[in-house]
Length: 160
Image (cartoon, rainbow, N blue to C red; front, top):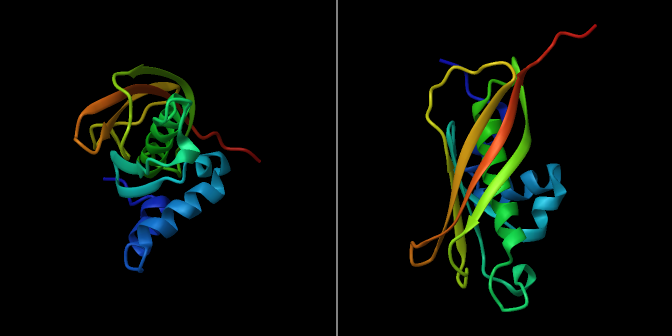
């Protein structure tokens, strides 16, 4: 079994603090600033799973007053990326998003929660296309969006 990732260690420490979810989410958005545009809150993280929430605010709306399609994509990529970062053994492997296929199933007129999950434990390969399924749900627990995000996983090479 692989040891806990650095990201999961930080997550665990943040959970001991008041506003730990908020603090951790801010740190993630500091590291990857574009995600800050949707003001996400990561609410669960473990190897193989991540979930996050985006509030239904004007800043993420489209012209009809619902959560914009690209805000939904942004939330899906955030969950998938944080989950993969927490799951891939950082000492031997690295990852980068390679592609995304999405389906918009309904207008999003409430807060939205994203869930990214893969089976764990798993054997990590070199030059692997890992498909990460992400599902977004509204406050009524209705599925409103799905994404399959392809993460390109490679072994780290030794450099001198």
